[in-house]
Image (cartoon, rainbow, N blue to C red; front, top):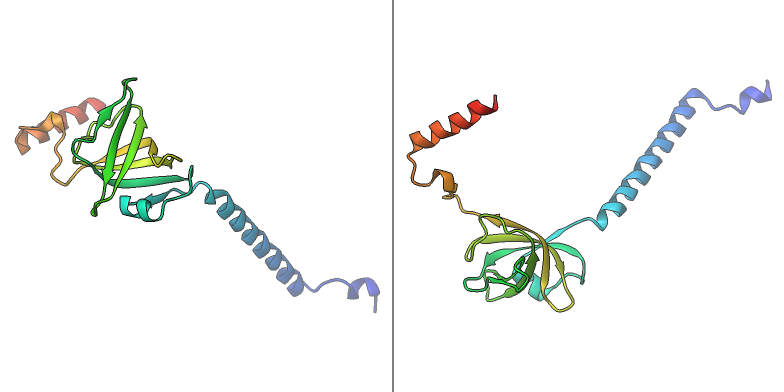
Length: 161
């Protein structure tokens, strides 16, 4: 018997070794992706949750709730706004945002603020997402009948073709 032939792996064993190597590579890639995405995850907090169990200072999170009536203030620079987000309970989180407010953003409406909790307890938002209820009608369509709104929608889509 030739020693060179006997030290060689059988094809069955070669496939098994290749399958194990491929599995190890897939597991390593998954762990690497999970580690990379760990710092990019953005958790969602309600005001009650943020009050009771706040995230780490500087961790990217989302804060969702209602804009408290009478809390919206524009700062001296004219671009920064401060307001308070409330939840179901008597919890309120102060928020500061610099930028252009969404059209639907008003006091008493729903909002999701993306940002970070600062060391002073103020949530500094990088982005605001205004929420509306199911009865929302765009300003352009207010006061129109359903037929008039359908005609207007048809006219705008004809121009795009």
